[in-house]
Amino acid sequence: EIVLTQSPGTLSLSPGERATLSCRASQSVGSSYLGWYQQKPGQAPRLLIYGASSRATGIPDRFSGSASGTGFTLAISRLEPEDFAVYYCQQYVTSPFTFGQGTKLEIK
Amino acid sequence: EVQLVESGGGLVQPGGSLRLSCAASGFTFSSYWMSWVRQAPGKGLEWVANIKQDGSEKYYVDSVKGRFTISRDNAKNSLYLQMNSLRAEDTAVYYCARDLPPYGGNSYFDYWGQGTLVTVSS
Image (cartoon, rainbow over all chains, first blue to last red; front, side):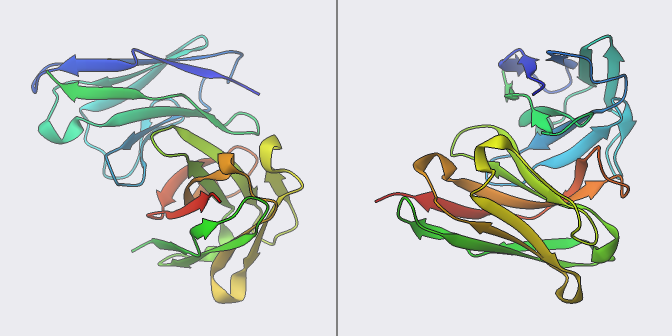
């Protein structure tokens, strides 16, 4: 199975700052079979990005995704208070569809 | 509005069985692959299984093969997960999720239910 490794494990930033989260795959997932989800405590995950760089319906444009080789990045341009949460990447090039271990974005 | 509502979770002894249900509304249920995804307490997400629109194809993560069975009833807009031979490591919140794209094979999840907690303990 494809293993996704997210870094950092925890990211401490202030509102208004830019966040950069990384996800690296153990083998190729192509350039587009990668999604990003946001999860807040006690809530279900919410789809942010699919196809590595396409925003899901209703997602603000401060969220962006990109790909480079087996590495993927989720960027949040200007952090809002509601953005502090756990973020997961997911590959869907092949079953079993696997998730990274998550990056916790916390308020500094 | 798309809604997915899970039910059927609870406390079960190791080796026991449980059947989860997911009631779907707000979209044409029979047009989508559907999945179950779980999350152990304080841990990350794990895709468990998915099923094709007509139920003719089903896929599972290795850790549940032979123990769990996914099924659906399109007439009732419902998804199910029959869980047998439960183990402590199956303890998790189980989410029902809608797969995209509709043709299947490469699934990400655009709508999720709120989840139902399954606890396997003696």
